[in-house]
Image (cartoon, rainbow, N blue to C red; front, side):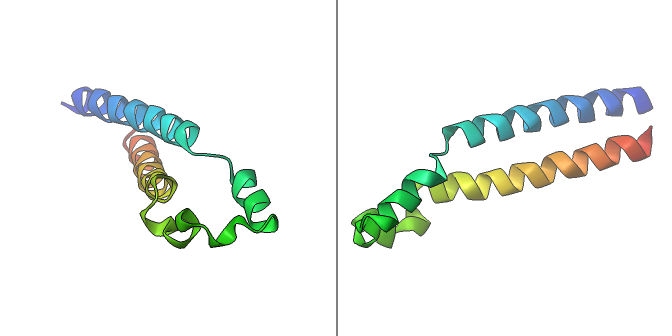
Length: 80
């Protein structure tokens, strides 16, 4: 029974690790936002609605999936 749980937890950890990598790769670079702010592009429509943008959602998903990854890692290390 214990080894079955370890296999399930390990698979979930692998899926969460791949999800973190993919979510981070889909995010745009932060330097683009900084150069836009310096160049006067901070008052664009996307800058005003940043909380609703795809990058904001991806940043939120990154945090949650990373938390899941860390929790799974801790659980696997405690069980072993």
